Amino acid sequence: MDASGFTTLAGHFPDRKVVTYDPRGITRSKFIGGHAQSTPELHADDLSRLIDAVGDGPVDVFASSGGAVNGLALVTAHPEKVRTLVAHEPPALPVLPDRENALAAVEGIYDLYQKSGQGPAMVKFILSTSVQGEIPAGWIDQPGPSPEDFGMSSEDDGSRDDILLGQNLISCTHYQPDFAKLRAASTRIVVGVGAESKGELAHRAGEGVAAGIGVEPVEFPSHHGGFLGGEFGQMGDPDNFAAKLREVLDAKA
Image (cartoon, rainbow, N blue to C red; front, side, top):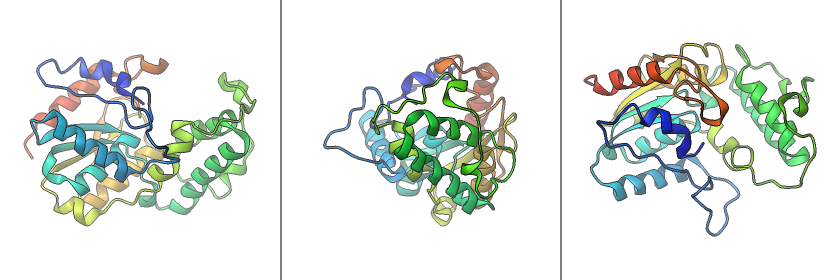
């Protein structure tokens, strides 16, 4: 997701200086020198440089999904630059009790992408995000719908440069938070989970991250993309989501 995904949410904070950005490799942020994959640590370094460029630190950070994993890496490396991190449903799968099956499922999606292209792999990715409860062994081999059922093509165009499936999928989901450093950080860390995403992979991972840090997860309205106001064709509950985010940011540590 690039900066355009946060247009609705940012519009709820006219009283704050809000900075959104395109993570490396996405939209206006072009690769220089070539990278096959990005890591949360690399994204964290980018974020640190962005904070320095903007000035006015330490800052409050709202980050969702893979961005929330990058936010945890940022606080691990540079806690002095972040006053409050709100990490919404970070899919850090090593924290799950079913980590072996979950990580194997993601690795299967990546392998499917390398073998068959974007359509078949994206279908499996979409299905993985909505599994209720623990991921069963051999999940990747279970039959399912075709890409055409999701409005996508089964044809393989030969490209392997998808930002999600190729660049970030493995490194993001396999990230193991350094809970000792996070607990010791000066940053106030809030882990958010969606009211409508209970039992889903990222929600469960958010609960696991919160437990590792030693905080209670905070429930936000709607689902994994609850802040969306129609961006990318997805609708959450942005008004109530923003109100909850404001409440969290305004709360005293």
